[in-house]
Image (tube, rainbow, N blue to C red; front, side, top):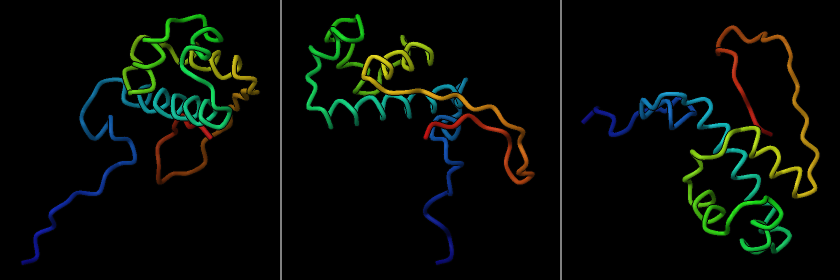
Length: 106
């Protein structure tokens, strides 16, 4: 039996699923992951985060469960600033010919 039972993904599940705006979805997911990590590190409750972000607690809950379509990348960046994080945006020439230019969150 030589058939593979799996396929190697592109690194972007949203692209692999054929969703439009896949790069934006991936960046948003990465930003929400950072927000969630910081909230857990500081033991910040959703109600407290909602007050910091200027949104309702149910919206924080939905965001952390992956329903973040209503939030722009800019707004998610502002949430990180509200969590006392510095956000740096770096633009540089693309030099890797093997891969296309991409948005990344570190």
